[in-house]
Length: 255
Image 1 (cartoon, rainbow, N blue to C red):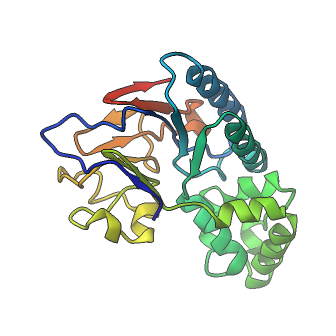
Image 2 (image 1 turned 180 degrees about the horizontal axis):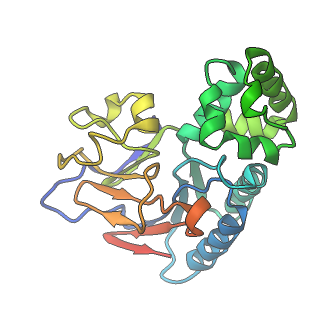
């Protein structure tokens, strides 16, 4: 489930993170390597500006692959960023999105997870040099052959990255996950499928979830701030806008 720092949110107080921390939260990337590079440089520049704090963390909300043209390059860059952040003394958390889960499901069970090809997986296959099956040859054999080719094309470091992604992270009054949570269920009892896939009843819920849920998954034209949740997926693959929110104390801002 990830880590939990600080206290639970109280609806009568302003949500905040510990005063010695700064957190950068990045929405869904979806194969837009160009936008990722730009956001990383903005984060690195911002993190070096005063007031400096001893604990800085970057949180990625998942959906690194699919839809956009450069899934492979995105993961290569995130792996390099992990080393760069370590040298800078910054912590980094990569959360799992439903698209990463679907990609691994396709490799292990292509016939059962063939739907992945219809919501962005074909772009990811192309980025790894794998030709997707045509729409009129989606036979179990063709799907199995495609999954085998992807399995062979996937670098070991990429597979390790995908398999080790976290489901959630809590810091102060905030809870980070890809899609959201099931209203009325304690955060430490949330099911993985909800944190990866949920929309309703989460999006329309006004319940206090215990912490402010910061999520992606559902595309919004610009970041949306509610008392109980913050939505950061601004549809980078289609809009050219990849959002990064900065949390510092009780302050929220967007790079």
